[in-house]
Image 1 (cartoon, rainbow, N blue to C red):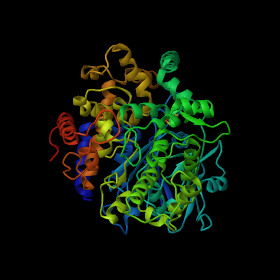
Image 2 (image 1 turned 90 degrees about the vertical axis):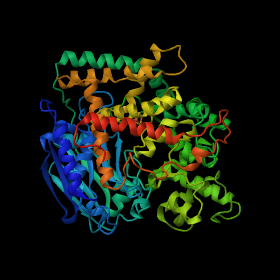
Image 3 (image 1 turned 120 degrees about the vertical axis):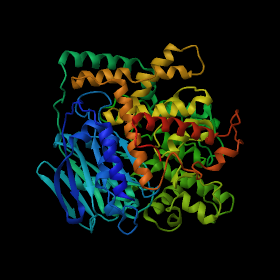
Image 4 (image 1 turned 180 degrees about the vertical axis):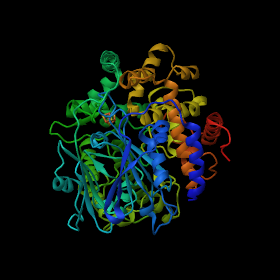
Length: 621
Ligand code: SF4
């Protein structure tokens, strides 16, 4: 990576984006951990960065570029030059629903591009309570360690004793609880499985191989102790209460929130079958009547409505069985279930728990197993003994463990779908994008999602999934989705609020229309969220500022990815697996292929306009 050129371009952007009069508040320093010599220090974040990029992924991307080493792509020094930047949400501790999140920026060892995962957990809130806006991890430890961050300083507990520990064993060791939380890896991260995940507070912290990066850096667990129960609000108390009451009422009346609270995110599975984006039998089919067993109504009937949510999130989509076992999210259910021909929720729940405990990303694991199943049926890979069944957990659970520990037949599977497809000389049924396993969408039924995934964002295409959109307008909606999602995340608000506060409101207005018209794009904006942030912060934040921040975040990622060798607007290679673009055959009633080139052309056109609007002198060339 040519860091000099990148830094020059980013400095120009900093000047271009600097909103001279924007107020900044909250912590202004970052805690930097230098793993190379097991030290730490405070670093003052330039005010310009805080004013221009605020928090979340935008600030994370800027700080990542600041700390990345020139030879970030060199395998031998790769991890010591690949910083991991964790940024807390600006709205942390404000009491705003959906205001607690943590963004994690790193260079994915799988795609080679900048990746940012945004998760809702208490890590960011604890970081804020220690007085930091961000945590920057540089260098690499020589031996495995548990890193303990407290008000009194940082302690590196170096020991080989953790090797082989599962996530639950590490959490027991570091005593996670109300005062302490941890982000830990299991054996998969230690073994540098490319789809290893970091697990925190009972959920994965996202895809892209963060667990593998932790493994390279020898971080077994990153713990933080701190808690702040005081609200941090600058606005007028009366205005804040009024704004929160208004937002609370909308959320309370929202059919989306009610469905999530009744059944969890698996309520989306019904529409996945109906719209034809469900991955079934390794993406060969797009729907199946047995999806009923995985859908919201059936899950609520079987397991009750024992709901809960991530810290500060009002959607409350995380459910548990009556005995307290976590019910997976819709993406994990589809990938560990229908994608490998399993429609038994009890078995999927067990698979999910094992993946998390061993530190594997459940979505990628489901994709790899889907590939293995098809390769076995096609006799492309002779991996399994006679009698092996992907429906039988007594066979599948040990297989998942073998993958995480890289033993037996798990060893070849641990390399991931892309490597497996290449090794077999047939990429026809290996579903990956830039080497990362495809998620729970058959793009023939989810056009807009293909753009989000191809660009490496991998967040939900909220408009495409939850509304009916004209096919012609999908790229325009995808760009709007990017603007709003990245704008909200960088402003410190969960994009999960898009549906109850933005889309549903618009649907109410256009109740009689089957398809959301393109003209609605002007109205589909996060007005209510901007109003609530303004009341809490005590100064005006407009919708245009949120969307502008989303575009700035996109631009930073675009520039960084270009320096890393991925030009998002010029990529001529095969971004999306061919199967979705050429094969209309499936069991869905509407035959369809993904018109990816047309979508991409429109996307590039719109994004070049973004660049042109942002300022002169820094075009896409
Ligand atoms: S929508 Fe669900 S998974 Fe997302 S933050 Fe809220 S409770 Fe957590």
